[in-house]
Image (tube, rainbow, N blue to C red; front, side):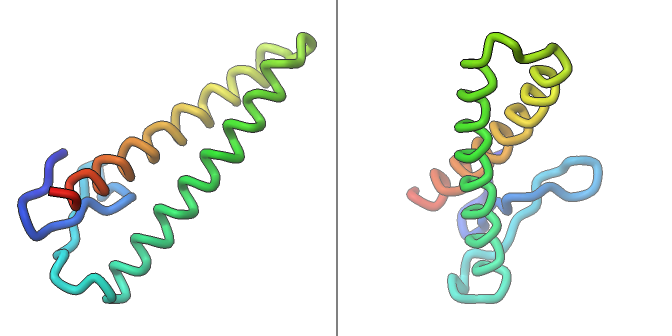
Length: 93
């Protein structure tokens, strides 16, 4: 998932899960701002889910279905967070 120089990895996938890239020439373009906003939303949702996970895991009465749903949510949030970290890391080069 490494972009070539001059391209930004977008925080969403294309059809069949392939990575999507955007030309990094214009950092103030509509798509660049959309990408930045989407990354911000994804990271905010991950932070909220992490707080919820701490609450659920701290409750000894949590049922298996709740834990399964929590695990699915955390898996999605971790994937989004890794994609954001990869994209931002590539821009540091």
